[in-house]
Image 1 (cartoon, rainbow, N blue to C red):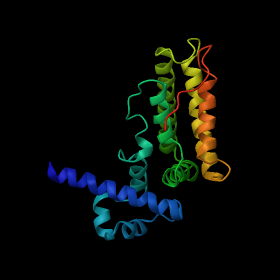
Image 2: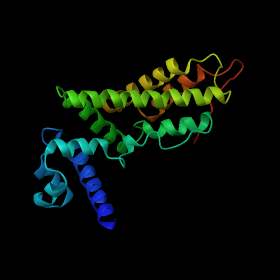
Image 3: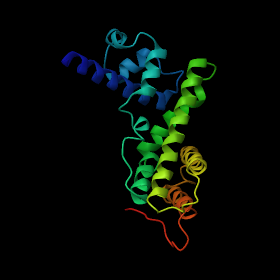
Image 4: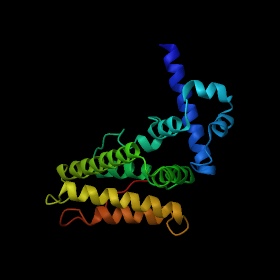
Length: 203
């Protein structure tokens, strides 16, 4: 068992190194040799864990430790907690902008592969289900209008988050933290029950 844990840890280190290289060089420049250099390992050691570049890239995207794969790791507890969960997903910091940049690079630079296209669709559907679940949770708590359609508005939330992420990466000066949060709060405000006057915020 200890050997397995060590292997998982090493794969995680290589996945993180791969994402750092992708951020600097894109997918094309993310060679096995470059990733090995970034991780401080020999190419031979890297090959023990990943035989091909494709295998390494796929694991780097699927890495369970990566923040972009942990969006559903926290159970919501009302609207304020939902906002906190979503804040952690947005590119509000330079670190998260880097994560979004890597994420976008995967989406746009790896076309023409049927299995990859299928995985991409599955990931998008999972994220939409996650957003629908958050909306339904807030509706059931009585913090959103009871007439809200969780499926429709969950899809709208997913679209908003993706849009904010892309805009903040492409135009960070035009979409600073404040503007991103204002857009998120406007989404919430439009769905509050009649008579509510403000969105629950945090920080």
